[in-house]
Image 1 (tube, rainbow, N blue to C red):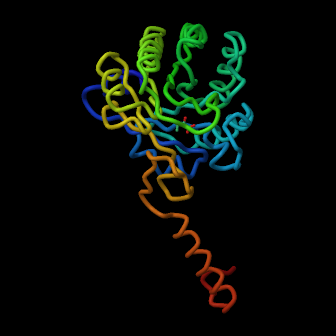
Image 2 (cartoon, protein in one colour):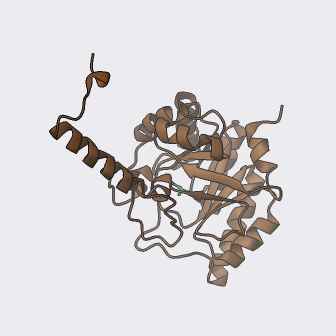
Image 3 (cartoon, rainbow, N blue to C red):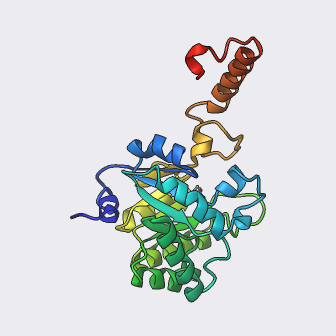
Length: 258
Ligand code: KIV
């Protein structure tokens, strides 16, 4: 039987890989048929909790949200972000990743970084924990304004080195966040595992966006965001209608009463 992970890898050069985030069962259930990967991203820190950065997200928060998301997935590969400060060394990373895998029943984890965390990635994979890499902008460690990556030769070479190391360590895919399109093409053509872009052009093997951005719940100014629907507006309209019907006693009718 082809594993879910191998299925994702085999899409490279065949069909684009579709990824979205989810933080709850209801959203996961609604998107699952149309996604290959659902990520429980630590972006939930800013998106749901109004944190200034993802650094304040805890392991416990990720576990709770992932347990909810698990209930809504039957098709997609489920990946969980390891939050900041939970993979500072190999033994801490292994302990926390095992905990996440066991308590959430996810299929894989994602960690941010390249060369600096390569020993950690190797350790996780040796212990049968599938890993998705993440290079380019690293929200957990980036200070100040997010700037695209790969403009200078030094930065470009480092990102290529990071991706090759992550691939050699055995990761099954790599998120490229805000990587210059030419560099995204070069990386995607030079490694065998899929690249998943966010703000990194259609030169990547797949795309990921934060679902709350896609649905119109946020006011993100990031260039890569595209609002596919304005659900916030629809929900406000539904609440307005409910308010009117309650006040005018139109709702509930006999049909909605015991
Ligand atoms: O936390 C997150 O949602 C992410 C994606 C945007 C890649 O890391």
